[in-house]
Amino acid sequence: MRQLIMASVRYNGTNRYSSEVSLRKAYDAHRGTAADVNLLLIAALRDAGLPAHPVLLSTRSHGRINQAMPLLSKFNYVVALVPLADGKELLVDATEPLLPCGVLPERCLNQTGRLVMKNTAESRWVNLAPTQRNVHYRQINLTLDAQGGLSGKVHEEHGGYAGVEARKELARLGEKKYLAELARPHSGWTVPKFAVSERENVAKPLAMDYEFAQAADDNSTASTLYLSPLREFSSDQNPFRHDDRLFPVDFGAAQEETTMVNLTLPAGYEMAETPKPAIIDLPNNGGRFIYNVSGATPGEVQLTSRLNLRNTMYQAEEYAHLREFYRLMLEKQAEKLVIKKKA
Image 1: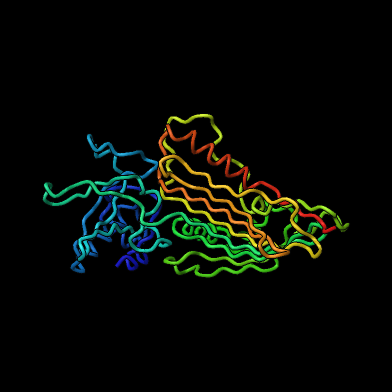
Image 2: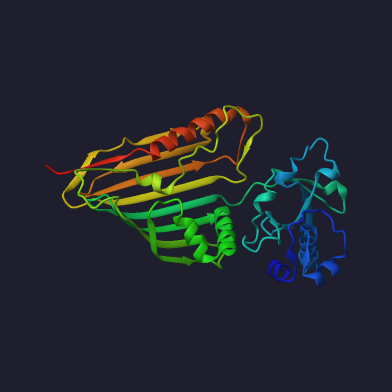
């Protein structure tokens, strides 16, 4: 039913909890507000014999609802709630074709919504907790040459809400421009191969596989090489730049970012200095960063960087801890491997 509505009426980007035109008119125009789309969804579900009820909410950019004083003007969106046979409930939105059924758009993840029933005594507050995370995974195989040149193969997955954003960007730019944007931050990169899979299957992570090469600055063989592999694939800027903050940090959904690197050293070279492993925790089990470097196999180095932010929101009083957490993480990711020619 959701697929039928999405195929028939496209969301025009306007958020409302009620329709300003008849639903028939919105259906015939094949475009409509969030209210037009999702009220049509509720009507279609009911016509099919499924119980469906409206849930009013305020999008994240519109502000939070005060449950003690829920003014109608504070709401600006509506989704469908469908009771399931096992006693659970499914929140359904038909404005985002890039999301699987039962996953609300990120703009809707604003803590709580109000279920509206014909019998007002049955109306109640509904938790809008996300059912997906923001997941980014990379598996990278790198080869370093004696001049400092680097080549590699990358397998990258964007899951959950990260998959939505990656698919949107891919659709907006097209593969050629997307590839150019991917290579732009990396000085001297050439990317001879690039492939995308699971682009249409929104229930699975969007996967990308590509190869790259980065020539050395000169052709002379170096006795000592310095390399920061994780810096090539992560930002060097702390997103939390201010000393303090008055409002919560709202991520919408939990964050998970994993980068695993396998580095092959040039023949005749070995690790001279290995960065120490690290585990950095946020207070109250709010998040963890794990960093590890291993050289168990001669001529190879394995690096693991794993970020896990478990909370969707961090209060203003937690901001200093979050800022310091990111500072320490970026500092660790920037540490260089020291690789020397064997004596």
